[in-house]
Figure 1 (cartoon, rainbow, N blue to C red):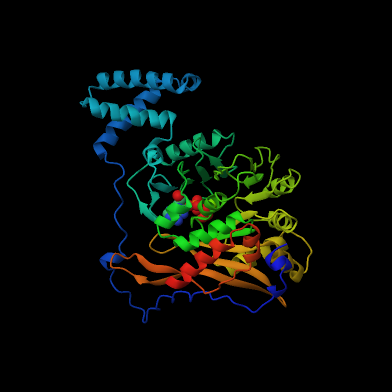
Figure 2: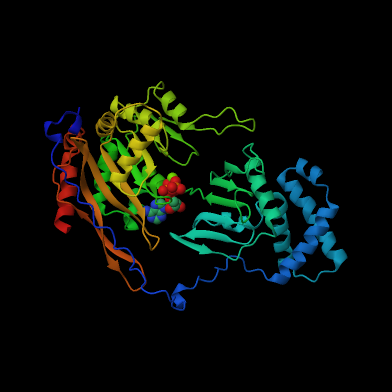
Amino acid sequence: MFGKRSGPGAETAQRERAPAPPPPPAAKAGGVKPPPRAADLPPPPVHVDSRSSQYYEVKTTIFNALIDTIDLAQLAQLDAASAREEIRDIVNEIIAIKNVAMSIAEQEQLLQDICNDVLGYGPLEPLLARDDIADIMVNGADRVFIEVSGKVQLTNVRFRDNAQLMNICQRIVSQVGRRVDESSPICDARLPDGSRVNVIAPPLAIDGPTLTIRKFKKDKLKMSDLQRFGSISPEGAAVLGIIGNVRCNVLISGGTGSGKTTLLNCMTGFIDSDERVITCEDAAELQLQQPHVVRLETRPPNLEGTGEITMRDLVKNCLRMRPERIIVGEVRGPEAFDLLQAMNTGHDGSMGTLHANTPREALQRIESMITMGGYNLPSKTIREMVVGAIDVIVQAARLRDGSRRITHITEVIGLEGDVVITQDLFLYEIQGEDESGRVRGRHVSTGISRPAFWERARYYNREQELLEAIEAASRKS
Ligand SMILES: Nc1ncnc2c1ncn2[C@@H]1O[C@H](COP(=O)(O)OP(=O)(O)OP(=O)(O)O)[C@@H](O)[C@H]1O
Ligand SMILES: [Mg+2]
């Protein structure tokens, strides 16, 4: 109906103006390695845990005595509060018998830690309690990393040994009815608060059980937050709002942890409240505010290896649910075909994310997902399908200083021969670095005054706003 799907002028010239990639680091001449400078040395671990090593010695003694005394099977029958009480009584007794000198505060701390070990997630608890941490990455018992404000830091949090870590992994995955051990060493799970968890255990993980947690943020970032952080300019945000509202089909592309899901969530904020939206995700992360939303989640195979429901199953089923928009958390396989078909058959305003480093790479990825899905289609046909389906690609990136930026708002406007023609509307231009190592840059308009989705914006009565946002951006550029 709109833009390239009807517009005669769609197959115009290639207008992509990707910013030049940063130059590669200069190759070192000669074979002599210079001595490491202070800046090259790994930073010391951040002190998340302030307890001393003596404290840990005492804790181990008391913990071992507790395990000898307590009936774990019976403890498992109790609810959390009663189990805590039971542990409290026994720990207090052990402290008295062993004559350990401790202040009341230390004793309380010890009790808390032991309860966390026996009933909860052990040394992970203080990290899980913090809202500023985006990811927790545990590479074996004594290397725990966190990501805070886009920066990955080694912490001084330690597990007693790999057995304790494995126990905690087991506790996490058993809550979603799964098991992780040598025979099934890979497992995805979710914490009760919605955080996404992956465990890979030895022998596949060579240096011990490896646990990765993407913390669930209760207060999801909004477009105004992204604007405040400088991830997008006010004009770019206005254009994204219009794109989300006027039912363009959107792909959000980006690397791992670049902010794709966050951006998708923001974009869904512009959907009108009377639209029926169906979301399909591997682990429900999106938080749509509209009243008419159906949330679907894939299911991994059970312990016998059956019962799996894939993303493709969900997307296909969606089509029988009278959706107006389909939102796919992450497109990574053959469901790409079904999503594109949905986009091409009247479910305008559908959206999805995918892993790619540039909008052009996103197009290649989607094409190869379809090819690898076993559809025997000539590549020109696939490209026609891609071009017909996708209106806009929004590229997210995590820059080297840890900040997250929207680097491209790019339209897919047509096919010229075999080449998909794209047109950048907004780009993020890197200008350098300030004294503290933060990347300096700005969002610029590429000077396109009439995006291909103009007619669509006009249909929804948003063309004046679109024009104002583009003009305002052009004046600044
Ligand atoms: N623009 C932003 N500014 C600051 N923090 C952000 C921004 N976008 C996302 N984040 C934070 O970064 C973390 C990762 O974001 P998100 O889950 O959206 O990334 P993703 O690209 O979907 O990751 P994955 O590839 O693992 O699915 C979250 O904690 C989120 O709150
Ligand atoms: Mg994501």
